[in-house]
Image 1: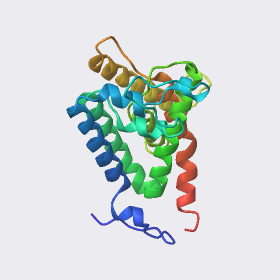
Image 2 (image 1 turned 30 degrees about the vertical axis):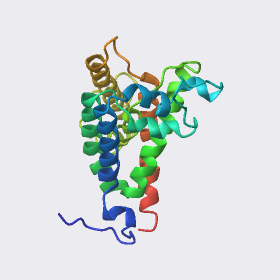
Image 3 (image 1 turned 30 degrees about the horizontal axis):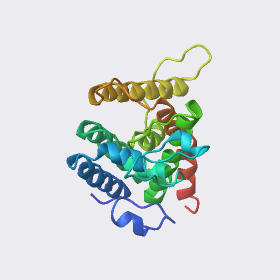
Image 4 (image 1 turned 90 degrees about the horizontal axis):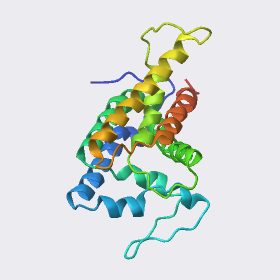
Length: 223
């Protein structure tokens, strides 16, 4: 399908291959390989985001190492807790990412995804700055895409609640549904109970709400 181009908007090198495809393909490849090799535990320790490492120095278990903490919000997106966790995240990534990429461009999508990963880590740290359990999965970064999608594309009318406007109510319902579904996935993929990173989902979602419109305006700034 040929897409119409807005006047003044040039096709970037990133748009030759959709960024959504690159992100989803890379995530699927690395995560599936880790799961197939049975190395999810080791990968979580090495590449997962550990909130406590922001302010404290932690030692890795024998035979392992820790990546620099500033890098782990990104590397954590490549590690998942099984194929169900990975598959659900990829579905949302592709569904929301394709629509957003057509609107804010490939560079905008990458910026939103990366920003979402870091704000997700910040949200998780804010709720538990001394937590030593690694945060893994791309759902925090994908939450930014869900937030951007909610802001730009969710047009279904919902009743306002008192002084709260319709748009705010709709976004709140979408956030609640997203976190709720992730909780169910967490229950299904965790042996010892749900292990959903609530702070990460909220942080990523907020990133989408804050950045989607500025990225849209930036893309068409010369149009």
